Length: 334
Length: 227
Image 1 (cartoon, chains in turn cyan, orange):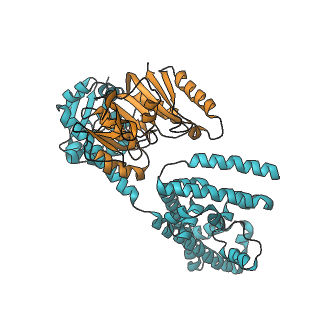
Image 2: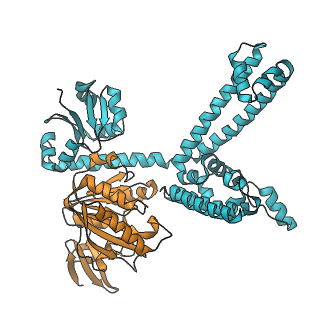
């Protein structure tokens, strides 16, 4: 029976355990360690690990799986890994296996941790809200494009293939049918293809917006959803600006025309702007929409500030608070 | 200038403004958060503000089991901008280590500049303390796990880390903020419930709890030992 292979990772080097036998690899320098833990495979590490190519190996760190697989190993995550636990409680043995003294090991630990943390912070500090604005504008354009193509194709369908509409009421299915058959004229089929490609593109942008929001404004995304959140950020230009706005302003962002009209003519001000698009607002009875819009806006304000100033994630707590309050409001009114 | 050692590495100093507790700086000449520095006999003592650091508040309120000693390794969850970490770093000294875990990158930026750069016993780790095995490769077994993360599942996070890294008989210390767990219930109820959670694991035993009013409201420090 083959012996268990385990990989114990340390800042100063790697140790592969074949059963009880410990085979060490000390990083040639701090740079090599940093590359390894950043997910790159450097030559020395690669030639060390390749000895076990094709074999299953236990590892404690989930993010190591990608790196190890790329060299051809078969990593299996084990949390915790018994060999790692043993070495953590026996520093002397760790040093002995690696052939290092305490100062060398400490130096590796401190420097590698500092550099990796610094790299991560620089990466995160790149303001990605500009990318969100661009992605959102692309999204809206794609929706317009899809509508234009849809209208044009429908004109053709009504004139030359009305039966298609009878058969399949859903426009999306009609498009797919047109695309899959070779219909005449050829340009119609090409337009169907264009529609499908636009739809694909729109999904890709939607995903990108989701990822960006998750990265730069996860709390706002948790409270009102990534697209709506992106819309708010886009409207005011940046997350920083959104974070500086009072909740009352956030509440009526997008309803400026109605707002100033009411202010000038002393009429009734709008209750909601972009926020109206949230199902909790437009899906609720008219009488409580104002309360819900106000509630939502105040939570968005908090979320935006946390996202801009500290990056902690409290989205789940805010969402839960909101759900409870909305439920209470709805059952009270309904 | 009166100077008295309260615990190993923690001193009570007196100046014109009264009594303060302070730590002996291992990076003399540098300040971390605008703290006051008192020089006695050629040494720099950094005043430890109980309104900014819960550990200082607990000491002033009569903490008996002090869980930081020179030469120890401490896992500090919730390092933020490093105010308290800097004092822990002073106490453990050049032969000790503070593994400082923080999830929010903005306060951590200041931390890197002001704390870990100048103090060669602090290991900065940008990670969510829930993902224990993402950073386990950096750690050795520790004498104390100190957790101050203001999350509703703080006790779970602390226990997970203690299970993985705390040595037998080591200290598990949790700075519990009642409003982070549940903003609607009474603080005393929440403290009771969370303390019960710790005992129910069967792996940790609570040695003492310290209410740190008036330095912070509805906060308590729970000091446990790993069985």
